[in-house]
Image (tube, rainbow over all chains, first blue to last red):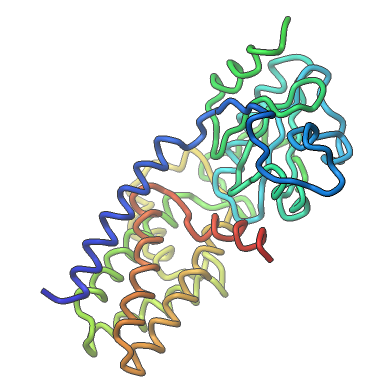
Length: 153
Length: 157
């Protein structure tokens, strides 16, 4: 058996496992416990503010009741679909803003919030505290459900 | 990044070749051909045939990366032989991510090709294997590994 064949088989197995795992977690909306995730420290930002995103960070006003922050990048296939999903949700639910930012221009936020890939979506409450996050394109129903947990009508 | 509100409400007309937008099945088809070709390289290495196939694939990557997807040979095969038999695409995607993926593929293939020409078979096989994993993930799952590496690289630099 040639070494190339062994490498090929290993590559197929590893890639398939990775792909299946990725497909399962992609777009899943996860709870963020701001206190339990001191993911990083910052010399000028107090720890309890680390998981807050303000209008100043975004360069855009927060939504009245909630904000969907989407980190995108120039080379991102699923960002387009994510933009459509979040755009629809923000039009559907009053007081919810959708803000899309370029991850490359906000590398400080990327490191602070531990963004590993694009799209990454953060669901903020009215105060700008991060309540949920999703890496990959979330399903519309999941975003609406996540909002429903703290946006009262 | 500008929030293109227009694209939220008006989906592009199916089949319309809007500037910078491509039929996503084109790059996916190309990824399948790339996967098969790189697998053949792994099976045949080290040999003159493996090096020749690798040189071919390196040229294909270079055309897609530097010339754009219109110049990509596999894209041409898709447009002439495959798409006429398919329904128009239901959605389009931006050209930049698959084009960037071609340049990542080119980087690995170029390293592998140089290694093959110098007789460094283990380096060649390792580089081809990495390009193969990326192409396989794209073909089987529609997942762009190179695109994700981009942000990770920007994070540390």
